[in-house]
Length: 304
Ligand code: GLN
Image (cartoon, rainbow, N blue to C red):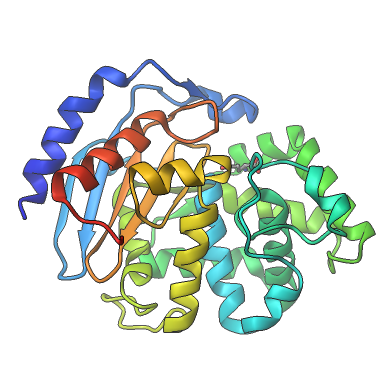
């Protein structure tokens, strides 16, 4: 398969869509990003790396970080995690509060904000210095020691993060948050403010395409069973109330973030990351969704 040719074609065919979405501005520091940035990177399990456009430019990974924190927590807690967070699609927005009261403070899944905040709370309980450990984790799996947090973005989100603060406080009232509310929020805002490029992210996601073992470090990051399960949760919940649409039009497990990144994996083959900061009304990258749809159409690959 000529991945470079396919990426070049997709890039040209989708560029006319730039300008149709809206950059996230509810986190003020995110609003400053150049809306015309656009890159795609593919990493194969055999070590191939193909890219186009701004694939080497670091951007705010936002909710994509949720699957890294989830991997770290699952590895230590295993099945126990599922007493505190479910694994059903929410059918709602990423930052919704509505189901939490009816469901006694147990979030539907670990990829909506409420669930990710519980996972961050778990990370805080099981590690001495969660931000340091998370940074080590992403640096190792992306093979890039330069990966870091953008504290301006983290602080900007803290200043305007009323909804996330509401979610943690609400869950604490149900007994589903063990640590100090501000400490959990601080870790969460920093994890969302990790800066990584498409190339970094495609590389970091390779373990999801390889049964939990990272093909470069040869480390079993999570077990085979945990890998299958995280992929299932990405498939059903990775795009919030657009998860069905993503499965329908792209057909791969993946995760998006409001920074405009989307990473998806084809098990046993490759990982692919697209970045275009303009979002559609559901909070997913407008051009990214289209690029990935074209990718699975042109290559004919599917998990179905
Ligand atoms: N930091 C963002 C928030 O919590 C992440 C949201 C996202 O990427 N969907 O609002």
